[in-house]
Image 1 (tube, rainbow, N blue to C red):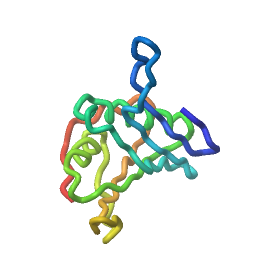
Image 2 (image 1 turned 30 degrees about the vertical axis):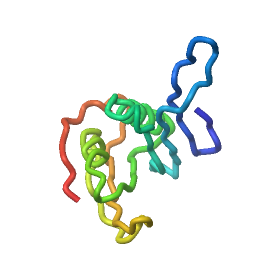
Image 3 (image 1 turned 180 degrees about the vertical axis):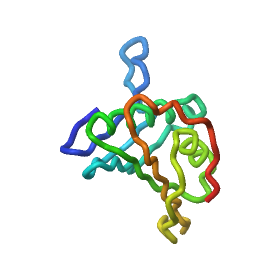
Image 4 (image 1 turned 135 degrees about the vertical axis):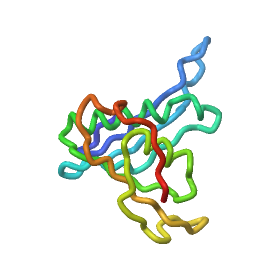
Length: 134
């Protein structure tokens, strides 16, 4: 984790292979803390490491970090068509706040703005899985 002011980049790396092979990035999240709001700027998992719980673990760590640094809520944007991400965020307690028309380019697409209103330490896993209907 690199702490750059009130922004962070968290990385999940592959274990070092026998013979000292290079460690690769499996997943990452980019965060920014503004006042009492944690902004999730980007989250990604390398395709061959998807569906292994890495994004959920990394988001849980990120939400806990934000809470420890004074965040009371979290915000993020996600493509309207990204159903796996919408399901993940719903299971972490995010709810729809609004839509940003034409937010994404290539292809042009709306963003769903999601809010985690009750960001408090220790309750990241306490939300029952749900769905978000954009």
